[in-house]
Image (cartoon, rainbow, N blue to C red; front, side, top):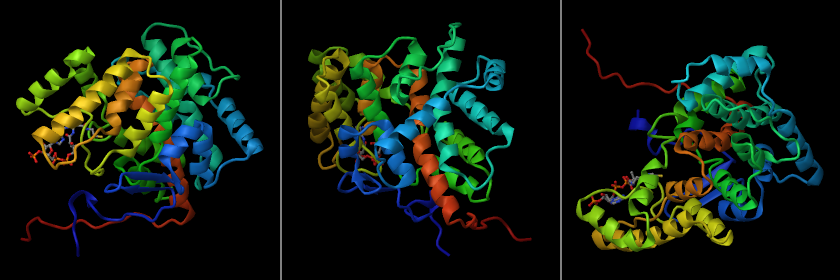
Length: 363
Ligand SMILES: CC(C)(COP(=O)(O)OP(=O)(O)OC[C@H]1O[C@@H](n2cnc3c(N)ncnc32)[C@H](O)[C@@H]1OP(=O)(O)O)[C@@H](O)C(=O)NCCC(=O)NCCS
C-alpha cells in the first residue's frame, strides 16, 4: 500500500468549498476567485457563501449579521473561566480553552449546524479582545450592536471606532484567509467531526493545530525585515546584503504557489485602492519591488514572489495590531473555513481511519 509522509499529495477528501492551483496561482471559494471576493464583498457575505454555498440575498445577509451580533456577548461563566487562566498562558491556548469551555452547556450535539458555526465565529473576536484587555489591566469593551463583525472586533480591542481604511484592510485580509483547502488545522477539524463528535471539539482540535509555528506561524519575520529596512531608501541595500549573507527573505516564496500568491496580489490591490497613505504600506510596496528583482538576480528561475504573510504583516502593522494578535486574528477568520469543512464532512461522513506502516521489529 502507498505511503506518503505527511500525506503529501494525497487527496484526503472531496470538497466543494475551495480550490487551489499552485501553478497558476489561483484560489477559489465555492467557484469564485478570491481576488473578486476580497475586492467586492464583505466578511459576512463571504462567510455566508462558504457556509451555505451561495451568496445571501439582502434578508439572508441581515439575518446572518443579526445572528453574529447576538452571539458575540461572552457569558459571565466564560469570562470567569478566561479570567482564571494564568496570565502566562499564550493567547492561542486561551482561545482553545475558552472555545472548549463554550461546549459545556450541552447545546452542541452532532450533527453540526450552521447556527453553531455562526455562534463560534461570533465568539472568537470577543474572547481575544476580552483576554487582551484583561492582560493589560484595562476594562472590557462590550460589543456594539451597530457595528459589523470586523469593525466591532477592532472596536472591542481599542475602545475606539476604527477608521474605514483600517476596517477595509483587515476585512480584505480576513476574507483572503477564511479558507485554504486541506491545511493541517482544517484536516484536524474534519478528523474530529468524522467520529461524530461535536463542532466545539472539532474547532478546538483545529485551534490546537493552528497554534503550531509550522502552520499559524506569524508574519513577525516580515515585521522584523520591515523594521530593519525602516526607510524606503534603505530597501535595496538591506535586501542585497541579506541575500549575499545567504539569508531567506521573510514573506517571499511558497511551497504550494510557484507563482505569485493570489492572496498577496489581492491584499496589495486592496491596499493600493485604499490609498497606501500609511508609511508602512509604502515601505512594504517598495520592499516588494526590490526583493523580487534581487531574488531573481540571486536565485534565477526559482520564481520567488511575495506570499500572503508579507502583506498580512504590512496590514497588521498599518492598523496597529500587535504581533501577539496575528495568529489569533488568523484564527478569527479561518474558523469560517473550518466550520464549512466540519459541515461538509458531517453531511457525508466516513470516519477517518488511515493505516500506519509498521517499521518496528518482529520477535
Ligand atoms: C515558504 C518556503 C519555505 C517555500 O520553500 P520551498 O518551496 O521548499 O522552496 P525552497 O526552500 O526549496 O527554495 C528554492 C530556492 O529558493 C530559495 N529561496 C526560497 N525562498 C526564499 C526566500 N524567501 N529568500 C531567499 N531565498 C529563497 C531557496 O534558498 C532555494 O535556493 P537554492 O535552489 O539555491 O537551494 C520558502 O520560500 C521560505 O522559507 N520563505 C521565507 C519564509 C516565509 O515567507 N514563509 C511564509 C510562507 S506563507
